[in-house]
Amino acid sequence: MIEAEHLTKRFGKIVAVDDVSFRVDEGEVVGFLGPNGAGKTTVMRILTAFTPATAGKVRVAGFDPFWEAMQVRQRVGYLPENVPLYREMRVVEYLFHRARLKGVAACERKRRIGEVLDRCGINEVASRVIGQLSKGYRQRVGLADALVNDPPILILDEPTVGLDPNQVRLVREMIRDLGERRTVLLSTHILSEVEMICPRVLIISGGRIVAEDKTENLKARMGGSLEDVFGKLTQTADVVGHRQEMEEAKA
Amino acid sequence: MRNLATLTKRELIAYFLSPMAYIVMIVFLGLVGYLFFEFLTNSRQADMSQIIGFMGFIWIFILPLVAMRLFADEFDSGTIETLMTAPVTTFEVVLSKYLASLVFLLVLVLPTVFYAAVLFAYGSPDPGPLMAGYFGLFLLGSFYLAVGMVASACVRTQIAAAVISIVLLLLLHILPFMRPYAVDQLWKTLRYISSSEHFFGTFTRGIVDTRDVLYFVTTSLFCIFLTTVIVTVRRWR
Image (tube, rainbow over all chains, first blue to last red; front, side):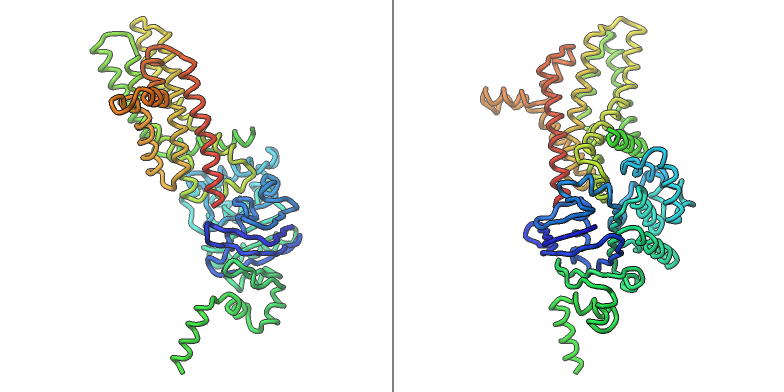
């Protein structure tokens, strides 16, 4: 469903994504891990046809996000980082607006919106103004927006940030549910979350893919917990150097 | 087409939910109302041309405040990302925002038609110059809004967008005053570029010249095109 080959993105002289290749098959839930600034958001923006790649080939649902942006956008539900929403609109108003934009048929809209309100647990705030909602609610309004046209592919940038533990569990269960019929790529910093809901992970560091494997295999191969694996793979040279210095000082 | 209607509707909602819309309306209508009263009691003539000229002048300061949020707000709050990952084209987004600002412009001018109605009730003004004046006002306003939209697409904060477009519009307005500093040929060119040359003394006198109409239509279209390019490029970086 998602294929990237030799994907590169440069911003001026800075190389944000460097020759990245990976694929996500239909019906998979894949965790996208990496330290801050590793290029996760940039890759997601390329996949969702927000920004074009400098080089490389991308196919999302069989379409090229640059040349066939409309086809890609129709098939991808995207939850951007920090969940930007129109703060002055009411939740239902916003979802109706988005459903119309995403081409949900007029007769279907009410039913679809009712469904996503239920599913994301935001029924009780449906008529509130978005700007007055807490972070957790806003996060779930963003999720409801991503789901409103029932897209086959979901790309979620840190979907559980800012949620309380109960909501986190709810959203995780929801993603696992969704993953049964859809392709999901989600980025997160919470490693236990990945172990719970993603059978496969991609780890990106410094703009490069440093690991792509089944979560289980990765742990077995590298030894230790996912946290150890992540640490080993993503630590930059100076962090390693710093730790050595510390150990030497201790000795 | 459906997207265009949906997006325009959402822009209009945003306009009328923001306090800025009402502040702009109150200030504009207050100023125009006061001046209408002054002009009328002093001149005792059933003539709106001065008022129309005045409206055209203060739009330099007022319409940038109307256009400033169009894109600056989307970039600032990050909603440009949700917007441009929905199945809509950049051109549709630009056009719908522009259309919404034009609707706002009409709402802003509409109450001043009441003054004209007062003139008709108590005197017999010439309807020709009045209609030409309002037509010119709409063209001038749509050009100012288009410039404001370009500025709004260039920066991240609304205030910066407003300042940039006010400076630009003032500059375009005062170009004809450059007479002493430019050779004849250059001065003619400057006059042609200037927006005030195409409104004051022509539309305000009731003259509808196709050259002036063409000037405002083409410059506005160019601004729409420019905004599309700027928004696309900003998204790419």
